[in-house]
Image 1 (cartoon, rainbow, N blue to C red):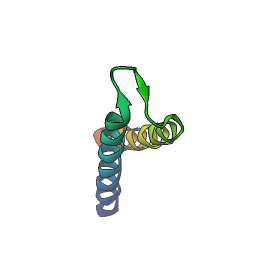
Image 2 (tube, rainbow, N blue to C red):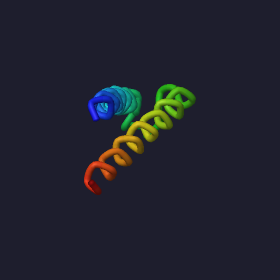
Image 3 (cartoon, rainbow, N blue to C red):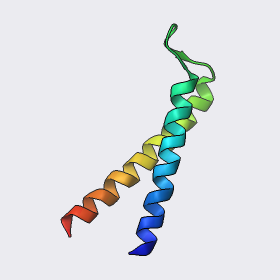
Image 4 (tube, helix red, strand yellow):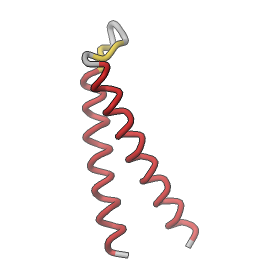
Length: 63
């Protein structure tokens, strides 16, 4: 049980850092990213972290 809390915390930190990074790299005037290839990698990792967080939260509510 304690291990799941640590994993959850790590994925929360990863999701926050990647979300802020994506927000900073996005140019709202031109609606483009500064570095599109890097933004794709950040977006994939961000989506994976959010997926794991949602998956773990659904497991916790079922019990």
